[in-house]
Each structure stands twice: as C-alpha cells, then as structure tokens.
Amino acid sequence: MPRGDVLAEAQGLRRSFGGRTVLEDVSLTLHAGEVTGFVGANGAGKTTTIRLMLGLARGEGETHFLGRPLNSWGSPGNVVGAVLGGIAGHPSHRVRAHLRMVAAGCGASDRRVDTMLELVGLTQAARLKISQLSLGMAQRVGIAQALLGDPPVLILDEPANGLDPHAIRWLREFLRAQAAEGRAVMVSSHLLGEMEQLADRVVVLSRGRVVAASPITELLSRAGSQRVVTVQTPDLPTLTRLVEEAGGRLQRAGGPSAHITGLDRIRVSALAAEGGVALHWLSEETPSLEDYYLSIAEEEFRIS
Image (cartoon, rainbow, N blue to C red):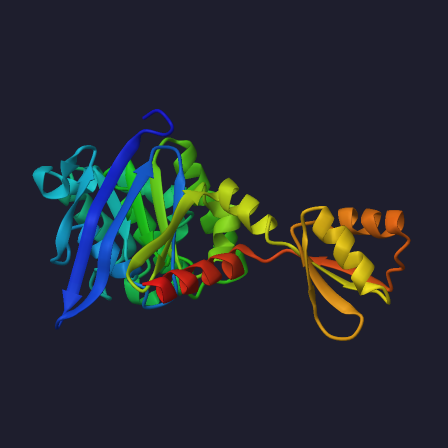
C-alpha cells in the first residue's frame, strides 16, 4: 500500500453505559506506512473505542477497513490484527501449538507460524506453555498471533504496560519496522511521552471525546511554541516594555522574578542587552507534549 493511503476509518463512534455516555462522536483514520498513537488517560475510552472498531462491543457509528466493515470480510484476520492484552489461549497449551491453531482459522500455514516466531524472537520459546511466559514474552506471542494473517492493519491496546525498558525499546523498533513495510499501525497508550519516539500522528482522547488529532511534528511545534522563559532582574518595568514591544508577554512572579511567553531565551537575552537591563537569572522550559495536551484536554472539557 502506498504510504498515506487510508486503510481504516472510524466515524462517529458512540457508546453509553446505563444512560452515561462514555464515547461521544469519536472519529479517526489509520494510514498506510504510519504509526498512529491513540493517547488518553486511563478510563478515557481508548479500549472501548478499539473494541467498537473491531466489532467486539455494541455502539453507534461505523468503522471501515480497506473500505468495508470488518464483518463483511470472509477472514478478518487477514485484514486487521489486534493485540488487546493477554493471550486468548489455554494456559497449558504450548506456544507453537497455540499459534498453529489460530493460523488454521485464518488460512495461514505452519511455516507462517515459525516465521512469526522468528520475527518476534521467540523461536527458542516455542515449546513453552502459555502459563510459563513472562509478560514481555506473552506480548510478543500476541503480536505474532496478530500478524499470522499478514494483515495491512495492526492495532495494539496499551502494549507497553508492565514492560521493562529493553522490551519497550524492542516494541518501538518492531512497530516502526511494521509501518515501514506499509502497514497502518495503531497503538493506544496513556503516556503521551512514548509517542514522541514512536508515532507519526497522534489522536488524543479525553473523557470519551477526541480533543486533538494531528501529525506528531505539528504537536511538537505547538508544544515548542509554549516555552516559558524565567528571568530575574532589578528592572522589570523596562524589561516588560521591551518584551511587549517585541510581541512577547511578561507576567510577574513575585520580587524580581517574571515569566515570559512568546519569545525564546536568546531573544529575551538580546533585548535585555540592547536595553541595558541586567539579568540575574535566565532559564527556559519547554512543556512536554503530555503537559501541553493535558492542558488542552482540560480546557476542552471546561468549555463543554
């Protein structure tokens, strides 16, 4: 698939429990060759959204994979692979036997099973029982299972939960490689910081509503524009005038301290030097993507 082609599209997903709306008009698209980060706090509705997309829960709205509802495909496992936590297999089943059973259901061969075990680095663990797997190994088995049908869409719900740093790095590199092969990859997480190293675009969910959706480069640019410069100077009135004339904003923070937005520290330093203002302290802080979008989510909820 050419990079950028829409392989999956959810429109107007809505879900209620006992008269309480938990998802409201959630829409998103997954593109070939890209990793989409689906981010929100625990309880925001990420898993519910994924289950609605896959037809595993009832609700309103629709999702198309390759232009059609998932239930219209004869073998859904050849269209989308999903990792929803845990392995849906008997604890006493051995890994290779379990995967061969799943493969038979989507028309994949035993050779495909061995190929997937090698791909996720579990060839030596193929004879282990499911109950003997560590959390990281179980996650890899789940990924191998999701890829048995060679689907163009891969969806993972909180795959990094409980993994150690080494396993998280492996997962990040693996998913980037899958996107590079042309798959549309969707990864849900409650940690926006993870997405800085993984995602091409991010969809942010807050209390069941999408509050932001854009390429990761755009998010980084927006976050960078919210930098805060902290200064200390005995001449705040003059510095205030200089900053405001340059298009920035200065807010006093008590005593000789102030916070400046709209200008970076290099510009502030140059203005102070040109205006003869002594600076006793100058520092700059750029909010993380997580801080930035948490503030947007909170603002969106107050407005609603």
